Length: 511
Image 1 (cartoon, helix red, strand yellow):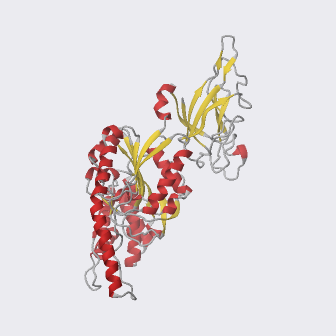
Image 2 (tube, helix red, strand yellow):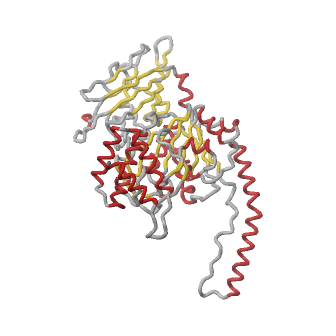
Image 3 (cartoon, one colour):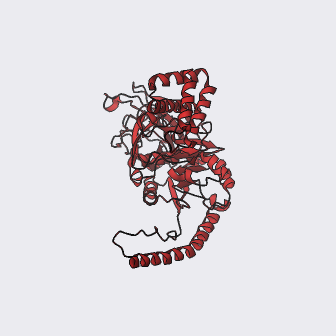
């Protein structure tokens, strides 16, 4: 099996083979194409194609200037004692973690192959020089026996049970979309859902009295509701027992070991997890954890869990009906490569308690300067981290059902899943400098909005002081985050703790 990483140039005005043409020749006979093919049709002469032999199943080429990966499982042709071909060579190709050719027979050589005849003689691996600025790195070969674990189907447990607010439309969308995405992975991924054992017993909302309803009619409505409420109250313990039994079964060590990772998909509340520390320990042994949106509104009283995911829900001032601006800090990272460096998205955005910038690699943040409301602290939106030998990916996006049906969001969550499963590579070392910079910029923005301060000047001064004294900058970010927890006085004439804190922090910058 061959692993190789490549990067094509950005040549927006070039066409055809002028867009970073190269290739990898197996035995000098069969070429896997290298070319900037982002957004194209996925032909045999584009990245992922076996040149002049077979087109890829789908186009998984990333944008130019992005490091991409080929993982190729090659079996040479077979010949009898007389040198007669008995079996053609076969090849399985994964492009950026996605299988684009599965055990594809190679009945002929590539056009213009370095070795243009299929014979029993072996051949070398060539990298094609086509006078294009294409880069290669991290090239290695291993016997196929060592890659069996990499090539087998990865199984993930997807939990959609809730003990708090239920994101019903989003969960229903996820339960439709994720199996479709698994099917499109061509055997690479398999999802098994742990869903609620039927609807949670609930009497519904307390009845309200319309203006035209008589006393007798309203009394009858109340009696009917009381019957439903009593029925729900009696049935709820039975339902909860079923959920508890389900968690004890699915999160036993023997059952967990059947999976490569766990997804908490809009879970909420105090799930009856038998052992939160045990789950974290299991993940740290090389497994994957993926959290979507309300996964941070889950197990908020269980430190092993919220320390692992690195945050617990503390409100959403940016509601589900709004469209907000975001910053992609690392557009070349596979988890966020589908987003531009700045973009807009309609969704509900969380802020957090227990967020530690020194523990995670932040990939996306809310752009406070271009979103409202504006507050003086950093709001991370998506991040990754290592958990021992395992990996974690979390995204705050996914409250709205519309997000789940959006192709870009689907790419985002699938890329995060693959990264967490170690099917793709991207940095995970903590980047607290990103959180500090965003906090200082947000502080300046809030001071401009609430105190009429000059935002560019204040931003420049804050970033300069932080560059000279990173410890000062980190402490300012910590203090700015306490703004979330301060009360807003109901009396306009009373002292305003939030305003006082903001004035104090601005003074720190200006002095």
